[in-house]
Length: 269
Image (cartoon, rainbow, N blue to C red; front, side, top):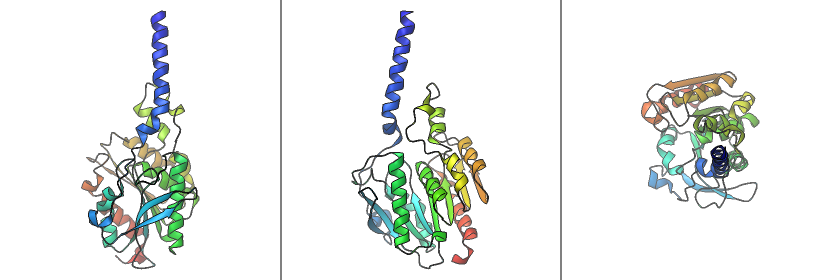
């Protein structure tokens, strides 16, 4: 009986550790302050956006060449910095679309801490910036990569936008936590649930989901669950040999580019 008590105590200690360490497991701050020209997108400019709660966020911005062109607000994943996404947005810059690459408050020396409320406040800051630049709601494309897909879905569910693109998304962080930490009551421990599967029904714009069939970080079943919950019109492309971080190597740009041309035919490129 003593051994059982010890085992229960150790397990309880592990659960407590998992709860208190969860944000360290999920978020990976990067205090690098990248410069656009160093990443091959010298046409973009560094701008600083002020959040509603007093933080200053680094972003890269390039306005569209035409008022009819879409403008992509890009919300990146949980690691690295916006410089690492330059290659992904370069084709859209070449197509003369507008692009806003946002750095979260826990990156680039902004001094903030990660969390769901913080991420959503940063998302609202990005959209407020685009509105201040005169970008029409129906020209805005919210692009969410991995962690950022939860931000993109939440923004699209509460504000009018032109399209929603999700790269390697999840249904909810609770679903994902339970998958990876199956031996614990993980879904009940999650503080930042980022419940996209519940929110996506509120989206009133075309949706594209692109995911890798070999993704072990966010298994494809969660992307399918999110797709099933999304309203029409919607599309999903599952790339048979792609994993989590290499979708660019398997046609991601062509898939997203084709979707944008179809959604915004008047853009002309």
